[in-house]
Length: 158
Image 1 (cartoon, rainbow, N blue to C red):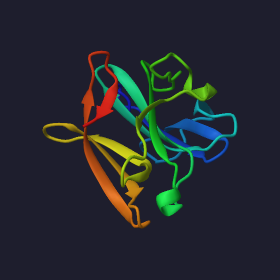
Image 2 (image 1 turned 90 degrees about the vertical axis):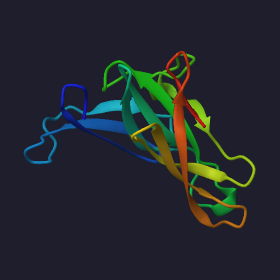
Image 3 (image 1 turned 135 degrees about the vertical axis):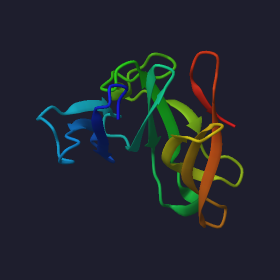
Image 4 (image 1 turned 120 degrees about the vertical axis):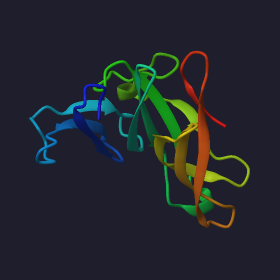
């Protein structure tokens, strides 16, 4: 839902980029024929769009690269932002997410492999980033971290 109470659905395939449509809240169906392109990597892997409104910005969290290969997974969580829910979403450097942009906020490190397919939500005392990842032995696990915001309004993982 955007700041005006309108419903939206973001979706996309692994290879052809992420799209968004407006939803009719009375029916749960697509409201009109407009299809917005919100992110893409020119054929590179991108999926799992999550939209989150914070301090006047819409943040688009996505997953880049490959999931579901256990400890060999290369998934990572990226973000861009826009003042308008339909974009354009840009990363910290100003690159449009429709042109492969995205600012990395979480990637594999230590015994955490392939973090991604994230969700972001507000809890009572903090914003939360939830995602799945793989342990060294390939076990799939749930990750939950607090999400902070730097002085420029960009998210970071605690």
